[in-house]
Image (cartoon, rainbow, N blue to C red; front, top):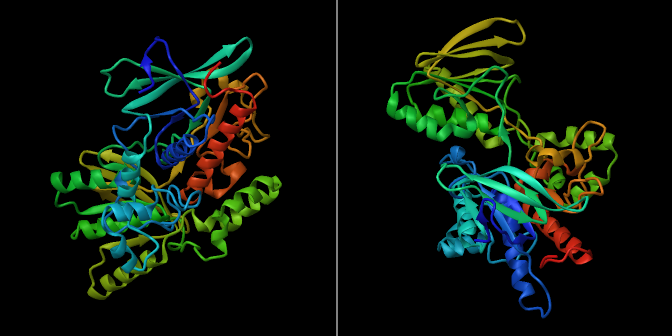
Length: 448
């Protein structure tokens, strides 16, 4: 591991990735394959990199790894295939290593289960030759100056267990891939009975043990995660009432048609980046139904059938409270006092629930929050959003020669796919190429 105790002497990496989810995992693989090619080229230099991850091991949306849930993107949009179809890190190579390639082909399905894809990501994370410090949280990023110029960064990471000393790693470039933050309505605080959908599985499993006779759940939200939570709770708690609260009249299907899906093509990023601001807004509005607050058609139909069948039997456990919102969710003992208000009539009904699940999405944190005083050197647009180049590098004042790149948080500049799996392999390659090209143009990869 190329890292030293707090305050010690440090080697200088070409880049440090903050966070090690799918995006920075794809970057680590791209670096490994780049370096493998470099070793075959006399005189060429490789790229040195390290990654810092708060989790104790690789994990991706563990709380939503539902048994029957499938991916919403093709397996061909894995960590590598769009960049390098011959890569040893492809989903197909993973299947071969698990002795399931023929079986998967016989399924005639482009969309593996979420559980299987998560296993693929773990397989790739274990296989890649990367310098990853798990169980560490970045708490400070310090600029390293040469004269008035920022030429590198010291990344300070603390041991999440509070046992080991902080570490400082130095790099000429940062790649921020810290992911999204769960969004809860104002005034709502998560606890062991009020959940964000991100934590559905562990909380539900615990509730099965502690309160197996749970009678009522409330799920808030109109998107895929909300519908999956409704489906899961309805099946796993066969005697409980499940109330789905949505502001729409019903769940809306995702547009995954061939032409609409072009919004996720690598070329669409170029189009979006070059478009005027008003066209960017139109593109987001036109194609938001490919990704936001939409549900797979098969799941919609399945839930609809269940609602109808329960009406036939006179046993309505699955209740759709549409054109409504939750105005209050307050913990009272082992129950959650929940108030649901109709947006049409204003009528309110009180539901005392065993648990309330908020599938209310995520927010993108300010990507400059970790940069401290250096954030003032980052340029912003008229709306106050961070300015980002086409290669995902944050625009800064000329005083900052070191690079800060974003894996996510670039929807306003790069479009819908900015933090999605669809372009992960291409995006990571573009960041790596930028780091290499900038080094060749003036910053040596082997130090000053």
